[in-house]
Amino acid sequence: MTRAFYVSTPIYYVNAEPHIGHAYTTVVGDFLKRFYQLDGADAYYLTGTDEHGEKIYQAARAAGTDSQSFCDRISQRFRDAWDTLEVANDDFIRTTEERHKKVVRAILQNVYDKGDIYYDEYEGLYCVGCERFMTDKELVNGMCSDHQREPEKRREGNYFFRMENYRTWLREHIESHPDFIRPEGYRNEVLSMLSESIGDLSISRPKERVPWGIELPWDGEHVTYVWFDALINYISALEVPDGDKFVRYWPVTQHLIGKDILKAHAVFWPTMLRAAEIPVYQHLNVGGFLMGPDGQKMSKSLGNVVDPFELAESYGADALRYYLLKDTVYGQDSAVGEALLVERYNADLANDLGNLLSRVRALLGRHLDGALPTPEQIDRDREVIAEGEGLLSRVRPLVDQLRFFEALELVMRFVRHLNRYFNDEAPWKLAKDPDQRVRLGTVLYNIAEGLRIASVLLEPAMPSKAKQIRRDLGLGDYAFADIEAWGQAPFGSQIPDKADILFPKKEREEVEKTGGQAAKKPASSAQREAQIDEVSIDDFARIALRVARIVSAQKVEKADKLLKLQLDVGDEERTVVSGIAQWYQPADLVGRRVVLVANLKPAKLRGIVSQGMILAADDGEGNLVLVEPGGDIAVGAEVR
Ligand code: ME8
Image (cartoon, rainbow, N blue to C red):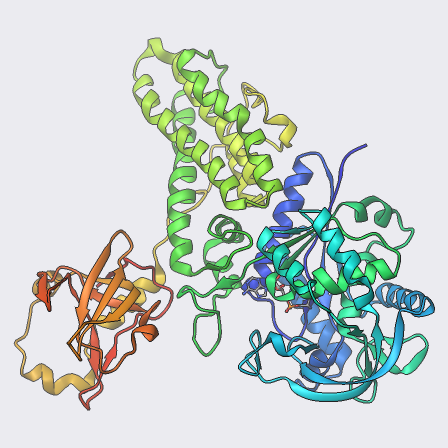
């Protein structure tokens, strides 16, 4: 029987529109689903929306609509978003669906009948953002660190789940299953949570305060706490307890979550399952957070929010998916942004992959009537063939371990090998010699075959472009079973005459835009300009300005005005001594992006060689304010 595989994402709250964090987790899920499906598994992928609870209720009221139509509208936005990003989920669950509510009620009743739920009055600090009571230890300066607000003091009568009773069991389970929670850092975090009392979990809300939720089966005055409701989606969608899907997929579950909801998934969920006498999931995979291009948490006020749908519009869903998987380390936080995407796009996709495809197509069309020739391999072909044939077996364990960027890097390394092979064998020269026709055919065949193998391995990351690569080579679809032996691209396949460029090279639109603005004269400086000689554009062009990031900053001894800055300029580090100590604390500078005059003659200041100067504007009162590039311009970018 084929192996089963089941992956889920969190079900997203409908109080906000889909954003890049949702997109990231959902793309990871889709990558896994497609990868294991191509590898012959019966793979099942679930995502959906979380629609009950206080914050959804409040959001609907603020929008002036009833809760259900509000949920219908935003939930549809998530579905549309996943269509845009080519996400092939098998099911989409909504917690307002009857199929879900029915299961929640059954589990509640079951746990209640066992005596694991009791009524009590509770007073504590409640964060509406998290939808849970917080412990004092979790607060930073009295605030919830995820939502940057003070929790409210609340006292109410609630039903409680005897979660503490399951703590020892859970700790032992995690200890005896080292990959139950991964990466390991998160496992340790959970073990440390479990080293002391976790208390009991409040699982209801009085209906008079939160009317939007699933009523408790035994007390219509209370609705189910949103987490006790939402977590159950992972099994209600499979028709627990005896649906075929539940029997087939539940034993091999892999949940994907972000680190923000670790406690709910690593503590609430397994104890709930245990109480309901349902086996626990197999793996909890915890992703890090995507940060703005400046490395800071994305927020509207910082203006560093990256919109995945704008990026998909400009660069295509496949390029965005590839970028998210290739430029992040699963489990760790990663900065993302348009300039970084463009760099990755041009280097990997337009150059290494796209160019090779168009070069091989051009030669096949021009010299071999557009047909894939029959190769006659010689010794010097062995190396590239061996690498191609062994690629899957090297990529698979990396994907099993959620090391996506390394898996994709292996495939791209192979593509770069194909490029080297192309350059070394120089088929354009072979084409000039009629005696070398067979050799020409062999070289072009091997490149086409290598691209076929690479395309199949890239398909989970970029489903449409992978198909396009093969279409442009006159080939159809393949599974992983078809890429372990070289030579499965059929000889004689005819390539289509015309093909769109796979990944047209992109300019960094943002950088160009800001460059244009910077060249304009700010009106307020007219007076000062009058005193300065005019310079020609050529004079100005002699000054090299570049975007740099402050890596560290410290006070210069015995110099009140000076700070010593260490700058990252992309391809090098520079030390710059800057006279801004009066206006900036060293700690406030780290991470900021500034504009560096990169070709200024080095000068020694207080014994330190300063290699350039950073730009600051005068606020008119003699105070200096750093010039900080907007958008998400990459470090090292030229300012023109
Ligand atoms: O928590 N980087 O829903 P939610 C990476 N409804 N991933 C991010 C991210 C970021 N900056 N921001 C969000 C909920 N995410 C509950 C879940 S499950 C039974 C209920 C992703 O809409 C990440 O996967 O707040 C995170 O866990 C999830 O979105 C939270 O989505």
